[in-house]
Each structure stands twice: as structure tokens, then as C-alpha cells.
Length: 309
Image 1: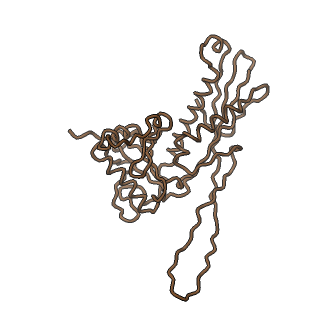
Image 2 (image 1 turned 45 degrees about the horizontal axis):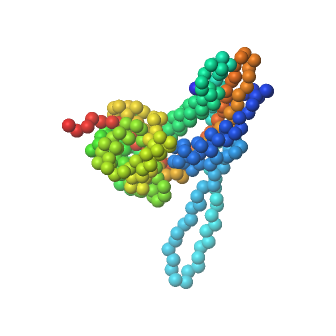
Image 3 (image 1 turned 60 degrees about the horizontal axis):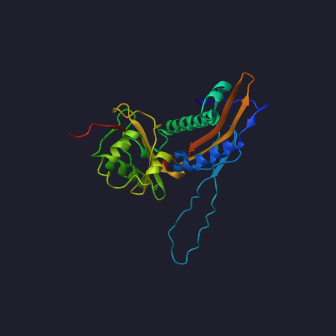
């Protein structure tokens, strides 16, 4: 079970075998297959500690002006600014494998414990991420009157989620896309992360024959469902909210990749004998994120409603 650390955990290294190859392998696999790297402006750093700061250069702003024949041209000098993302979170697992269990089991328990530990870490981080991003969207990208231009899209609120079933889920999804379009934030790769119950609604709607699933192995590997109308869809169990009623909706997030900056690294994976006929298997991760462009993020609230009879 991964534990949130108040600081970087004090992991003993005397006499340990540092599994550098394991941590590198996990980092490479995570950045290829994780949901968060697929929906954020992400970067993997080979060296990263809690307390570090990552500076990301913002996209420049250039003014387009009207021109009259013969006029002198104004010179605009662009000042490049950066956004700082603090690596302010850390976590670890630390599990004991007794020598007796290791000898009697037909499984490679050492590697199995490490594998389960990193999976628990990934779950923990996904859940923390989606909780942190709730209500980070721009004011025009959430609520009962969403839409920077029209103000006409009901995306629900935390106390009054939108009722979704197979008859209206497509309308709901296209509303998310239109809200991004009104912010001029849909001119690049866009995404939407949905809970399992909404996945069921999707595949039983009029989209069920649209081959939205893509590669059947992708869902098992990354949670990627497919592309609908230019938006990539992912299913994730760790979105906030249970989605069982209007007052307990799930927070549905959508956006473009530039909206959120994020980075994560498994710093250590190691094992060492503690002198009590057991081996401690340990892993340490550090991470940080920041919503840098709220206009590129959409926050909706929805719940699974009854199907029409």
C-alpha cells in the first residue's frame, strides 16, 4: 500500500541492492502507457527529487493587426514567460518478504511485491490527480451555463449532476467539445476521461456499432477507448465521485494537453536484508502537477440515470 510522505522517505541503503534497472524499466513503461502522460503536457526527467522546480516555457502571444497601404509597421517584441511546476509530492511502499515465504512459494515473490507496490502507487497518484483537478477549469468551462460565447451548456454541478443514459450521452460529450471550441481550445489534440459506468452507457448507446473501441488490447493496457469526433476517450476508475445520483455525481474531465503540466519519477526501487530473516522491498516516487491553462480544461458533473423503458 503506498503511503503519502510528508517528506522524502528515509530509506536505508546500507547493504542494499539498488534495483536501478527495475526503476528505469518502470519509468519507461509508465510514460508509454499511463493515462496522465497521455492527457497532459508531460516530461520525464532522469533526475528529480521532492522540492525540485520544473520551469515550462509558455506559448508566446502574438498580436495580429489591421494594415493600411503605406503605413509604418509596429514592432512587437515577445516576452517569453514560464510556468513553474513544483515537485511537491512523494510517496513510497515498504513491504517485508520473509525468507520462509520466499522459500516456500512457487512465485517470484520479490518481483511480485515490487510489481504490486508500483501498481498501487500508480492508482494512488491517479486518484490524487483527478481529485486535485476538480474545479480547476475556467469559469466558462463548467457549471449549468457553460460556454464562453453561448453560455448555453449545462455541464452540471457538484450538487446537481447531469443525468446520463444511452439516449443522451452523445449530446453530453459533444457539449464538452463545443465548450472547448468556444474557448478556441479545441484546435489540437483533445481528451476526455470517463468512469466505468459512463463507459457502459457509451458502448450501449447509438455509438455501439461505431468501432469506437479501436485496438481491443488498448483498454487493458492504458484505458484508451478510442477517438470520437476528434476527441480521445480514456476510462479510469479513479475519477472523483460515485455517479449514483444527482447529489453524488462523478466529476468528468476533458481538455487539451496544454491545460495541465505534470511529471513523475520512480526514484528508487530497492531491497535489503533487515537482520530478521526477511527482506524489505521498497519503492519511492516523486511527482507534481499544475493546471496552467484553465481555459483548456472542462469540468462536468454527471451520474448514471435510469434507462428509458
